[in-house]
Structures are given as C-alpha cells and as structure tokens.
Image (cartoon, rainbow, N blue to C red; front, side):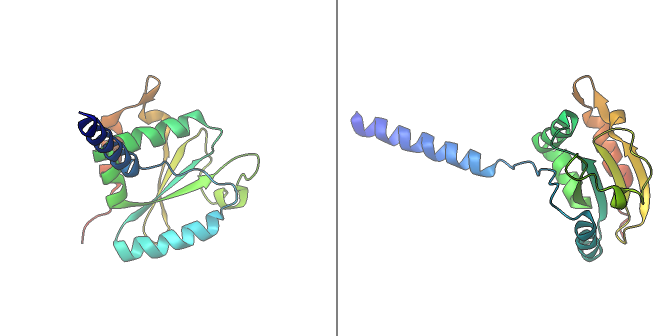
Length: 156
C-alpha cells in the first residue's frame, strides 16, 4: 500500500511539473528595452518568415495590458493565429520610459494597450484601439480572431 501511495505521489508530481512547464509566461513590457532595436530585429525576422509585425504598446502598470496578454495566452487558437502571422514587439510606455521619440512616428495613442500593425518592412498599415476588442471586464474572442485574420499577411 505504501508503494502505491508513493507511486501515485510521483505520478501527480510529474503531471504537475509537465503542466507547469508547458504554461507560457506572458512577455512583460520592459522599460530598459530599445524599441528601435526591437523593431529592427522584428523587420529582419518578419521578412524572413513572411509575417507582419504587431506592435503592442503598453506597460506593466496597465491592468488591461495584463488582461489582454492573459486572454491571448489562455486561448490556443488566438495565440497560434497571432504567432503564425505576426512578430509581436512589446513597446513599453511608462514613467520610466515613454518611448516618445519612437512612438512619435505613429498615430497618437488614446489608451493602452494599443496595437499597430506593420508590414514586414516596417511600414505602418493600421492603428487599433484595443478598447474596441473589449467585452465587459475582458476581451471578445471573436473580435480578436477577426482582427488577426483581417490583418494577417497575404500569402504569396
């Protein structure tokens, strides 16, 4: 009986470890990152992978930024559609680093998080107020999927 209990505990711990290891962590907005360097790297990667670039502008102070990240991570279809079609670049906006020079090249942001869709060469295609994707105290799954599919790159 003791061996059976030990075996059950080992199996449960192994299962917990596998689930924990598979859970993706949300990427944080980092005030120390260079938005210019990040976009340069994203352009190289997007051109190589034939993807567009999604600039996600926000900050760690922003509850809606956290909600959106968690919403995307919790939905496999949204997460896979996003990463199959876009290189995601988190652009920090906070008191520590407002990225004002970098963001001055884009339309004014009214609220956070905010998305900019760029072509693989970095050219601005669309500015999206993510408030339009909200539903109550969360986000609307169908609106997000529709938005991602509408702006995914055209296949050659």
